[in-house]
Length: 270
Image (cartoon, rainbow, N blue to C red; front, side, top):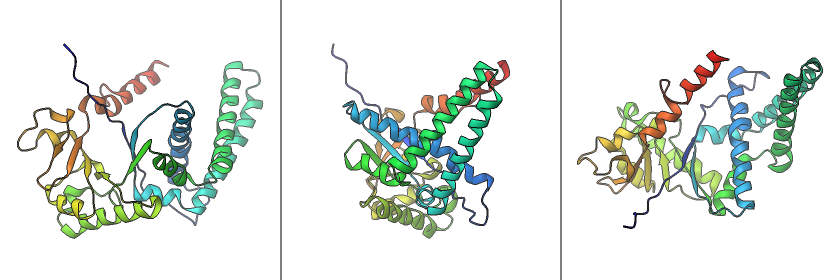
């Protein structure tokens, strides 16, 4: 008996709250952006390029929210990120000298010197400080689909006390996407995966074909979906809804049996 072919969708959610303080050269919360660039966005771009170079015919969907796009496009934040890397490179060099008598820590110091030096090279020389254009390239060649999100990542079930607020969240999300990527988005990662049926008409109005919502947004649908979150469903307005997989989400987020739990245990044991 031949098994039926199934598909798995890799959907990444890239978002950070908008934080920008031009009055300060060392504002703590801005480091969230710098850490995300070094630990998430540059590694993603590097691996996308590696897959392309190796001829791997991959497909990934990824949201980029308006607050994140606005920060990545900010010239001052770009300069601050470069200064952030230069400080870490300087610190790594000092650590190399300080740990000269400890082979294990000395290797670690060299690792961070190489890593942050490479980040600086990629950001300045390879991507010309424009990570948005770098992600757009992979969308344009057909291996990455970038989707949008709400204007401020506002939670629709709460915002819907004022219907115009949800409409504005969707409208600005679509407009911001068009400004940076030169096309309309096909999909939207609902902020915090929060769904309200009343938003469907605005999703259709602004050309959204599909949404990413929370698991229970699919499981509690009426009628109950036969395949649960393992297949998309369609709303009365014709919007296709994909739900997050419960087990996969638990492995990533759960503080009881997921990655955060394992990280806590490793810290205790070490």
